[in-house]
Length: 283
Image (cartoon, rainbow, N blue to C red; front, top):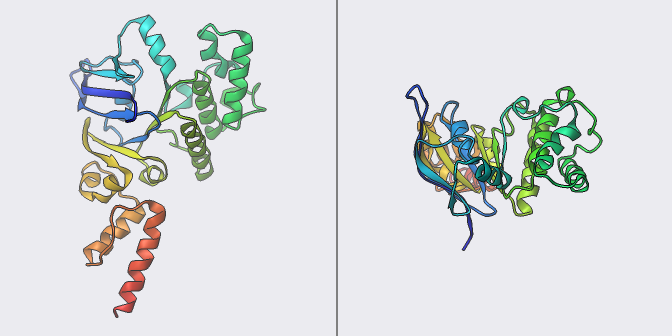
């Protein structure tokens, strides 16, 4: 049985102006999971993520890290933030030091590690994200994709058990998306649990094993990638467009063809081709 590394119980949060941002959230993330929280803009994804390492305190319910409820005291929160690393949607919210090396070193330095250990972590982290050689560059001189990779390196240097990324591929070109996904998959292969938010369903089909659909602050559907994308009703309700492969399979099924809706993206193309050939043979 897998170890549960992050979970919420009846989690809710109301802003001071009375806006109810998230409501009765119950999720469970296990060690080694690749999880996506999908929803349209304003669904509550960023608010939910701000609770995962204690940046926000819920107005109701609890969050557990390794089965232990978060305690909202400075010393306890420091321990939580070593276990749960967060990469913000906008690199400008995370990168502030005059050079890349100082930015990535900031977290480990605050852990009170030796300079030798800090240097080692910075070197390894930059190497993992393909940013070796950029140590002395000012972060604001980098491209959007490079800034995102430096942001991820800063979290890697903290050696967290779980990495939370808010819209990690937003604003990136296809090459940048591919680079970020490769980094996340490599981290996951080394045992790190990865949780991302996005409204890019095409990207999610290539990454996630487990999906939670968030709409107006509520989880309206959850399951494996295949289960969630096979159910168009909930995607439409959440104002999300189904992946192209899923949409085509759905249309084929509506036309009476016997197709398996619970397919991965790579298998969907084969299924579509089989359905087309079968249809032609029946003419």
